[in-house]
Image 1: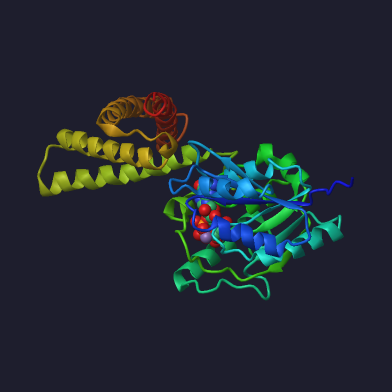
Image 2: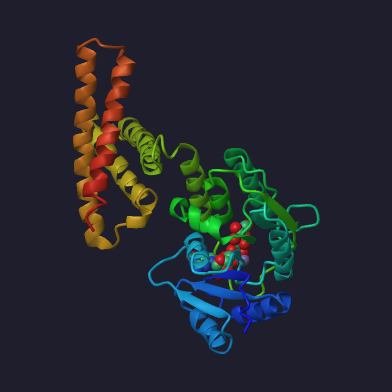
Length: 367
Ligand code: GDD
Ligand code: MN
């Protein structure tokens, strides 16, 4: 008896793609005729029943498997889990919405099987001969900006670093998996920039098809996660993402405070101390909601009870932070250990670290 060795696993991340999985598997079957492969659908418990649709196929086609993740979301982490769930030496990732050209797969396979020095084959929309189909100008511009950012910031010399369509040696992914960030959409970039040695790649052009069924999940949150991931790769070790966001929002709060205060003083003739109190309260409230929506969106407080509790504790923490800020600055100023500006700056920094450390514990660390 000769056992046929499995050559390739095709990982298909899905969220609400029930209308597309059967077509995709049929197209894989045609494109990969004569090769030994399996498909792994990684579905994040889609409400439209994608996992059931995939299991329906898997019942009669043993090459198809389903990983149904409960209570989790994220394209990158879905890809990582799928890639770690196979014994095949090569693994590809392809979108479940038929936008990637599956006929590229046998060529990726040939490239990697034919050249042992090659690590990864990447489907590229922007290499000579590739294309983005009928994208509107807005999406082309955004994609070009994201591509340029990635090229400069990460020094990844790829024509299409955002590509979600590629084939790689599975052992490489397994080795890198513990260090991948898993944030957002950019699994290819994550792999390329995490590898301690540059990966040898080849780019194969293809035309990105337009989606006919279902909806895209790439939205503003995904765009923000992308920027966060870039920041994290560049400065994350120096200044953690959360602290940077918290400080930026704090700076915005200073602006809010000054604006409110000047309106009260000049338009309403309010007494200075009363104006200060109102301005500080407005600024803290704005900061609380911004931090809740952005800095701590993964542990966001919801519902009246949590929000009021959170708001109160945030105001208490910030008030103490202000006292610490003023106290430290005054102490340094009196000790004449530097200029007034340096004293003030150290005060602000101490206040910011205080607010950050305590609010992460007492405002967003309780539920
Ligand atoms: N498991 C899982 N979990 N799958 C997801 C999730 C998720 O949270 N979000 C999206 N997907 C699946 C979709 O069902 C689809 O199969 C694939 O990931 C791509 O998602 P789309 O929502 O169709 O993204 P797109 O077409 O806008 O983005 C494409 O272009 C990007 C570059 O511009 C994709 O190819 C991306 O990979 C690529 O980075
Ligand atoms: Mn898509």
